[in-house]
Image (tube, rainbow over all chains, first blue to last red; front, side, top):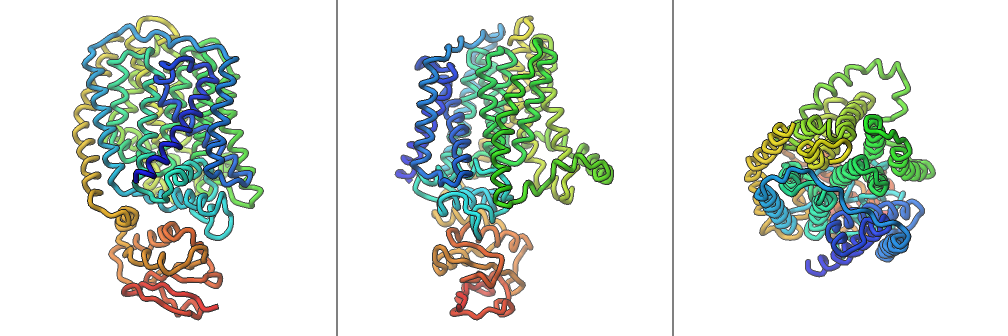
Length: 461
Length: 143
């Protein structure tokens, strides 16, 4: 186990450095203090950007083996370091809300985060991995096949022979990288520690992005609320594609919110990059990315100046990488998504014949979104905070309300147009597909609350 | 608006605090359940939940060489407590037996892994059939 952990530490160090390079290239890191504050974000960005490069490498027939992982990390890190010399450093975070609150709230939040992190780590070290059906039915088999067959093997028993062959390859590619560096194909032990680290980095990323913008008594309890969500514990280490998808979409939402508040294009660029990874993480990642871009567009309508270029860039990245994957599928004579076909939205007769499915989905889905035993009060609290923040940060309010609305409609539409039996489909997928909306809400909740508690000032928290 | 916003924060903190002990207890229980398991038991644990006899996977890994193709067959020669057992057997076997390659065509298979299936009904000739348990067998196809 020790050797495997050391191998993973090497991989994680490389991912961290590559993400740090991205942040340096964006002008967001220009001191040791910045680097420490944004270390969680650096790790997640490194994972996401290396994952995109790895997916593209697999599509062109490379194995994305250990040497190629190292090369991808070094190229990203070096490119960022070079770009960082030319890019103007970002200003320090905008001043946070005027509400200071009790420091004990911050202490309690940090303590809760530490307790959950330790409990998750202890579980990761001893518990079985891959306990979710889909994880051993196709997510981990695909990752193992990338290692054992040196890349995407389309022959019998290879990558595309498992369920959902049209799902993009980023998550298996990064699991495969963990397998290669740890020297074991086990689903438990080192791999679970890797998932734990990703989850901790996600929380640290939000903390680093919002530090200075949101007062500690608001920020740390809000982050603790994410860690305490029962579904968070189920998600971390599940080896499902949903796990990175939710966290990456949540972080992309936080970056989009910061762009709306500060109009610093660096955050829009980070959002676009993260959504590129989301689109390559799972089938619905592209839809969620487009809807988030649409929500950003809606937000600029209420928070002048109106801007369409940034939302276009935000959706451009996930569309571009998805097209690359679609192209790969087409050249290998593989079908697209089998759960639903977006082109069915253009068939009025088809849609009319199954209108009852839309009604059922619209009625059933709220229970999954609002279920406190899974998500605590993440969505209701975020929506309440969004309404309360409307005067001080109308763009942020519009972003949250519009993304929740279009996200809900988008998910309901999938159930509407899918040929799969509706009751079974909702029963087996709804609690997961709503997760991106929930994590988005939970991720931007600290900013919303800070805006709601803050001084009367339009457009800033 | 600020008093309402403070109420939202208070509600978030109170609700999180109310649920925190349960969340921590649940994580601790999962950790305790994993303690004492061997590496093999941890790796096979997911499919034990579907009441699959995991001995078939252990023996198949020993018998079927890396790179060989195998065909999976199920049937009523084995008693199961739930139909989910059969649903779980196939994908888990395909995962567990990598880098051996699962084929959907028995005529292409070097080996057949049977979980209650009718080997004779496949129309193949076998070099050897290793019985793993009642209704469970790993058979090498004669070429």
